[in-house]
Amino acid sequence: MGGRPEGWHNGIFNIAMVSGTPWSVTAGDFLLVVALVCLFFEVLKSTRTGSSSIVEHMLSMLVFVAFLLEFILLGAAASSVFFLLMAMALIDVVAGFSISITSAGRDVTMSN
View: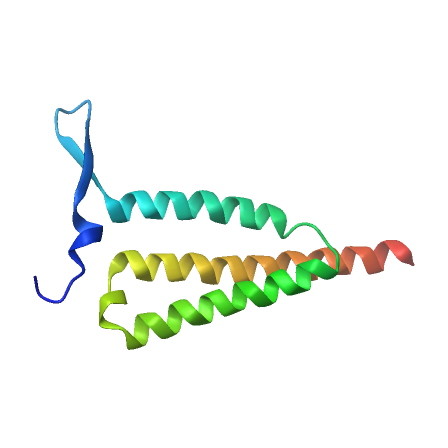
């Protein structure tokens, strides 16, 4: 075992590739795909402006900080899957703030 959480490394299903080599999709792989889809919709949501966007940015930052603390402090979270999920949370924070700052600058420019 070696201290690694075995659940994320278990194969869910296999896909036969054209080359004949089977591609085994693990639970961690599937979770990462779901997280990428969620990240896509989260970035789309961050294009909206308003008072609720500030709260959403703060919540995104809290999620990233929680990921970071768990990754550093908990042995069960020391995996590549968890690290990539944490990186996606960071991308969500950076993209949200970047989009908000850019759209706020456009709003100021258009009002002059």
